Amino acid sequence: MDLNYSSYLADAYSYVNQIGFPILTYVIFMPLLGAIILMFFPKEKINSIKIFANFVAIADMLLSFMLLQKFDASTYKMQFVEKFSWIEVKSINLTIFYFLGIDGISLLLFLLTTILGAIAILSSWSAITERVKEYYVFMLLLQTGMLGVFAALDFFLFYVFWEVMLVPMYFLIGVWGGGPKKLYSAIKFFLYTLFGSLFMLLGILALFFHYNATHPGVYTFDLMRLLNDNLPYSWQWWLFLAFFLGFAIKVPMFPFHTWLPDAHVDAPTAGSVILAGVLLKMGTYGFLRFSMPLFPDATRDFVPFIAVLSVIGIIYGAMVALVQKDMKKLVAYSSVSHLGFCMIGLFALTSQGILGSVLQMINHGVSTGGLFLIVGLIYERRHTREIAEYGGLSSKVPIYSALTLIIFLSSMGLPGMNGFIGEFLILLGVFNSNFLGWIWAAFSCTGIILGAAYLLWLYQRVFFGKLWNPKNFNLKDLNIREIATLAPIVLFIFWIGLYPKPFLRIMEKPVEHLVMRIAPENIKSENTLETKVEGKVITASISTAEAKEISEKGIEE
Image (cartoon, rainbow, N blue to C red; front, side):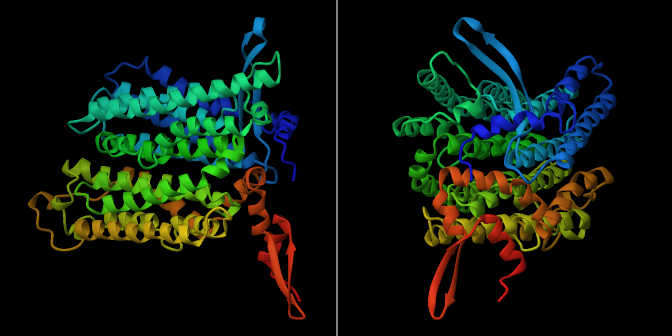
């Protein structure tokens, strides 16, 4: 397999006209256009504002589905590419490109963003009663920033989108948050992320100047060109560390996670859905898209360090979740545990581990987004998230109880639901990794056990037993709008759980290509076939395609 990423550049323009118009630009900037139009709405026209914001979000989601329809899963190359000169400084031969494109990995995260964005905006219908116009403007601005991060292929453009989404999230927490410390939480989120971003910016500038040193007269932030720059190991080590700080804070990995519980507890429900469902994935995506292919040698050497932090995060997040009294804080700490699982899958550096990790990013967005919606729905009715305030709700709100159970079981990784296949592939990848092994897989399993413990404990406390609290006697079950908000979550839970093949097929080629770049020995070990001939063990190396065909058809004698 060709390990040279210049093939991306050679074939990029053949994909521009897959649809015939710049669809990535349309999908990314439609929410921004909607936000600008919303600014001219009279603030008294609350229903009109809500209807228009929902229309924009749903239209954006439907337009993004065209990407899925036209996507070619048989190649690892970037597709739907849009590239033109954006900023030029001719005196130093500097050109910054407006450069967008997606592959199978970014496509799934791109679609997740539009889907959860539409769900989050719909869920805000009755929850937001103050400064409604400004709220929806910031939600739509946030959508544009997140989509841009997953499609940008120029570092300058990527950094612009990365920073743009900080501002609306800060205001969503600080203005529309529900806790007494909401301003503190907003500032903490902003400063943590900005701190990491500054180190990442230093890393980007170092790449920029190193490329100029090795290619005199050329200044570029073009990711595809930078991928072809052979960095010395010493540069890779320090640059990996700089990017690590930017992405690890966003994941967040232990011990950089302390901003997350505060931000979740004080954010509005829709803010928590977006924060858990999409923003955290930017960190894992950053490792996958930038750190690992740009710094392959350093990536291999950092595996033990990342694995230790990931396992600590898996166990620590689950154990702290187990003792929480606030439902939202419990779900927040569960994210620390789940994202630790994603990180150890990534740094197993195997196809199975990375496939499972990306799928688990999608699963976490679906399931944890659903968990925050569930918590938000009961909070709207009772204005408390204290677990001790509830009990026996299953007899009063049966639809809510049933949907909560489905989402809880999916988060636990029950077979037949979305969480299982991702966790299974991650464990398989860690077990088969030449860099990790069965011990790391065994430690990771403790998070699954503890995850089942805290979710079952929470469900038992809230829904079983006697309906004892008089304040819960008049609780109303879900209405049609609320059921419609949760319906896509439930659909994806069972679709991914029962038939994950379409999702895995989309990202299989780019994942294989990435592993061949950073850890080809893992590809070899994954695709080794052993058989016995006359009592002797014969080992044969086979291609990934051949391995897949054998696994599907079996070996004929």
